[in-house]
Length: 316
Image (cartoon, rainbow, N blue to C red; front, side, top):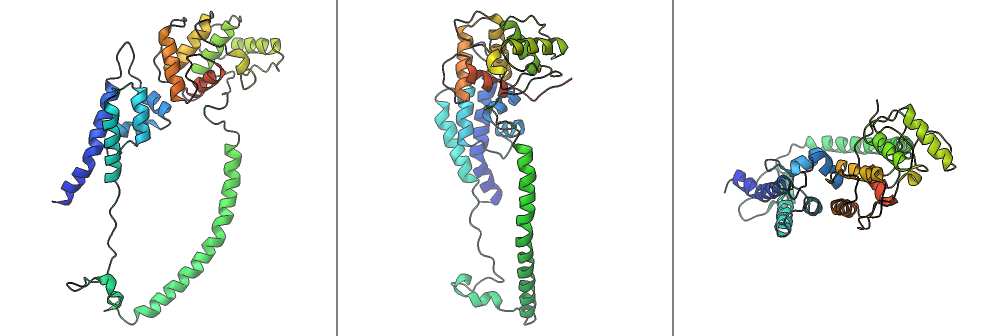
């Protein structure tokens, strides 16, 4: 059997797995649900879109790990019977990617019936005597160079760590902190703030543009709740601005905001302003994907996770 045949055989489980995953994705548009975009789906899985695209491409060498296979099966509501087969293919593909142990190199083949490993002297046969001093000098130079690198790397690493810490410490962890919405934001941040302001009784235009009118309404809301009126919606303002959404909610703007955020987080949802059974199912699906209590209630933790599941910040 040729090397190409062997390689093709090893890649077969990966191609079959990618074809099955792509079929799940292509077939996910059913029962009134829209097929999620690869961008939104990748965000739910915690991977980048390029990686997901490779997992769904039978012609690519990348194979989805079992964790991703299970998450895709849940997110795309794939047939239950497909999961065992997909996991078996993932395991087979992973096993096929493991490189075989390479044989120890030698200067010449050992005589028939004799292993080169059993004759260490064979490795040095035929070498010129001049090679030995040269090897000694090379070894000494490597030793000196290694000591210099050993001294240099910790110092450089310390500087890098100091710079890295300064840049990362202020960055919120996804799904744990409230994002900051402020004047100049457009699209999802502005629309969500405007819908929630309306749900709290503040008349603003829902135009997805966090302009002066929206900032002024936020200041009034903050002042009414004893907050510093800075016109920015952050960790102190969001918890007061969000409204619990469930079957008893009567504020259509709050429900619309949840449905809007669900859809843009990759979970298709109605945009009716009414808490429907479909809204409850979509909330439960999102909560399950984020390891939240699966209640179907848009509580504070769910609002925070929904906001952190949106796209990048957009400004004018």
